[in-house]
Image 1 (cartoon, rainbow, N blue to C red):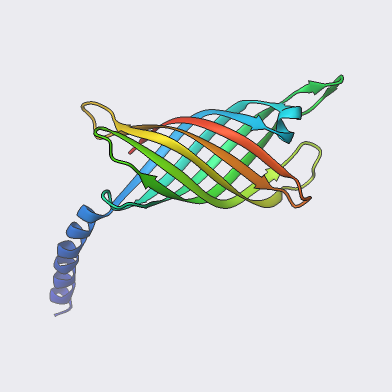
Image 2 (cartoon, rainbow, N blue to C red):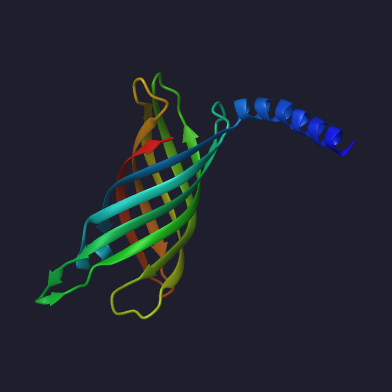
Length: 178
């Protein structure tokens, strides 16, 4: 009897999951590029490497999607007035809304959201847990003869530091969507 109940549950779940999978899309994206410091950060740092990993969730035909991102931005220290600044990095974990536009094979989109930005600047002994937000735009497209997509995006990040200042940087990312 127990096996019959389990078998019926598996069959029922299979009948439900397939239609849900047809309606719901989940994608993994990875990318890299460069991060450009802006404003206060630009005085002490120059651009450096940037990395992005994300999970996109939402029906393919919906007007809005959800994206959970991890972003890394490495900034190279400058020498200003004979004083060298050490390299630093800013990480972020953000939840973003994505507004896609359908234009043939190319899929432009707007993206924005907020989250957690752990920052440790040179000379600081501990990491500050700051909040921040980001906004930007991108273009997604399918790679020919594959089930893989690609994207290019630019976003502006504003990190609200606890010392009442804000740090700003702009990552430019190129990546793949699975």
